[in-house]
Image 1 (tube, rainbow over the protein chains, first blue to last red):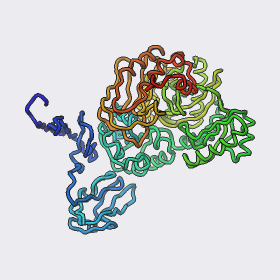
Image 2 (tube, each protein chain N blue to C red):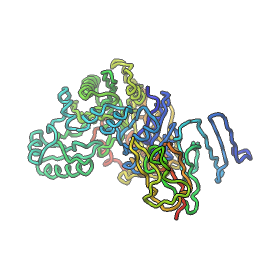
Image 3 (cartoon, rainbow over the protein chains, first blue to last red):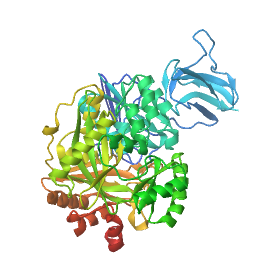
Image 4 (cartoon, rainbow over the protein chains, first blue to last red):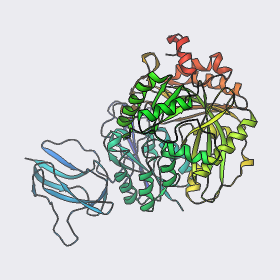
Length: 150
Length: 454
């Protein structure tokens, strides 16, 4: 990459994606996607203090660490399990876009080892959107809802 | 048929397990804490699930989250590595009841050998020599003193729920015994939540020699030879080697048979280690059994040529061991140095931080088991071991010189490590002559100028 004038290079085949881009410090940043069906492909950290010398696979499926926006806060998963929007398949979702929440508002259920856990928002504001689909597995710290503070 | 394994651990052993699974065509799931996002094994595993915050108690010790991750990712088995939940009988039981194969012994074997006093009693009945001591925990100080006098001073007071060299106190007479007894009980209560202690004769300057056990679920129990782990500092192993420079083939046969009897008495399956203390006359005494794979397993792997992690997985899969005791040969001499992020010149203070340049040695007879790489940030939340250097050759002399050569090439910039210390030990006449006992490190540190090992 160094000798050419290219600043970006991408190749895509079935089950494999490769993109190389000149990073801000002139160091190549490589992202490779695997053709895995699992949502839990290793995630790159949002900040790395040292220059990335080796390929760090980025999960195309899970919520990529985005830039922090003004006044936006996230409800994060406190456990590992399966995410449900409502108490049962027939019930209404706990939280939709526009739902106002306070700290102890139940926003979703996470099922862990056959126990249905009610998850509280722990923030105050208005839900912008849900970031995980109903019935999807979630990990500790995963962003569940995007909330506008206030 | 095991198709996916959850690795309930971190660092170099997690990487080791990923590698073995890769070679067996088994998929891997890494569970990790927020402090380990950039860890090498997390990046190399097929899948990864974050299970908590940086503290071990909030992540790697959270059995509930680990089992939850196992369920949502549909794994067949969990490899617990060493430390963390590897010897937690309750966790092994939970795996059993969730129909997830725990890669290790049955939970009842872990429970039996986890209580040091029960373990001693169990192997004693199998005709394995044990250190003279109290028959189980002592009830009170009066009884303890009686036992101490009967055994004969010096004695060592040990926590029943202890391990890893912690919760142990030595007394040389009645007066010091009274004090050490209470200190030991308090330490045990604080560290393990169980203040019960037992008393043993203290063997002066023993060698620590342990035997590797491998057993399948069809009744075959084998030993894969010994590891001499006498070079220890505060009961933490620094250097391990196989074969032991002290044992002759006769003693090896006797101790090997005793180790197998001890494992059979615990109805053992999978990999484990029987630890002995050996005095200058060659008397050997069982001290404890480790019901897990150990840090120093590569020493046995390079000495015998047998891949222990793969064997663990095959045994967990229900397969019979494909070899017998007579097939096991000790062909190479292997030496392992534990590379810790510590500063020997500041009393081994931990040295976490960012590794600048990392360059590992190579060549014939050199093996490096490490999760470190250039730019890696060593978290401060876990133990300080960042890698293991294992060198082996046809003779002990070759292994020693090779270790010295490899340590000279090993570069880890940005943090302090024990590399210079290991180099100094490789050049030390007492170690070269194979005369190191568990008293070695204290002696070495006292007579070696600090600028030679830091």
